[in-house]
Structure formats: structure tokens, C-alpha cells
Image 1 (tube, rainbow, N blue to C red):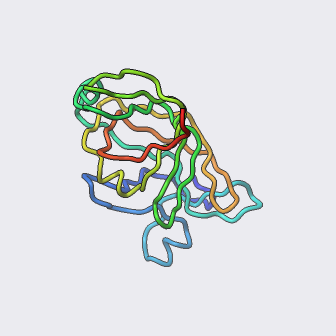
Image 2 (cartoon, helix red, strand yellow; image 1 turned 180 degrees about the vertical axis):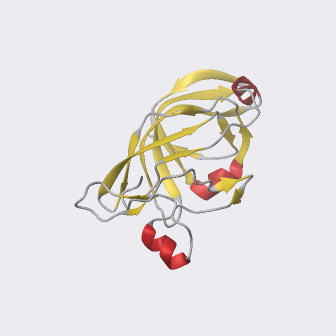
Image 3 (spheres, rainbow, N blue to C red; image 1 turned 120 degrees about the horizontal axis):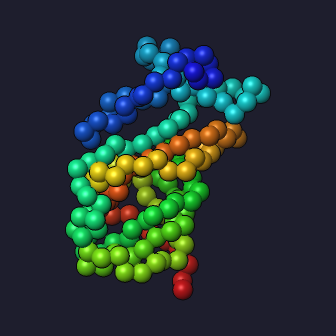
Length: 171
């Protein structure tokens, strides 16, 4: 049950590359004439509920993770992400890479120093070209929005994105 008393449910946001639904709280669902999705969340009773994610994930594809690596001539394998931020108006994001490796000629070759993964959420979703069959949930985290923090989860299989910006400091 969310913080407005609505039963939570699985809300499919994107299916087969097509946006199919949104997350809703009571107020926005009522304004739009949509059913609530159980996403009215708040940090504590002292805060107003707002639309928030709970567990957000990408489902399995068909590829073996090792095949995705072998199919990548040059890239970065990001094993762990740290904290970051998302501009919810534009979809632009920055996340810290806490464990990452260089891929050269289809092989993981060397570890990389910590850096940032920089991109745009909608564009990244369009640029996923290989999707693994090894789905796993990540470590729980906290999502901050308008001064509130709520616990969240995320997960995905190994996936390949055609292009992202990697930033960091000089060696």
C-alpha cells in the first residue's frame, strides 16, 4: 500500500520500446482521469505524498552476457553505479561509476578509475541494442525529490547502450 492508502501494483511503463503508462498518485490520477498506480509516496507523515518510483527495472532479454561483451568492439562495462542525479524535466542524468572496465575487441581488458556516466534517460532507452538474460536487482538506494528521500530499488540484466558519455578526471 502506498502512502495514500492505494494498493501498489506492477506498472509497466515501457513495453516493446513503447511508452504504455505512467506512475500516478491520487491527485494526478484524478486530474487525468486515470486509475491510481500506488505510487503516492512520502518520506514521513510530515511530508506531502508525491509521485515516486518503488522498484524500477528492465526485464530480461535473450542474450548471454558473455555474448554481449564479445559483440562489443570498444566500450565500457559498468559493474556498479554509485549515487547520481536526474533532471526530471529533461531526463538528463549523471551517475557515478564505482566499478567499471574497458572492453577492447570483445574482451574486458582493464579496470577504469571512477568516473561519471552522463546521458539522457529517454535516449538511453532508445539506444539499448542488446539485452541480456541475467536479470538481477541492485542494492537498495534512496531517491531524493523536492527535499524528500524514499527507499527505492532497481534492477536489470546486462545490457548494451550504443553510446553514452563517460566523464572523469585526468589520470
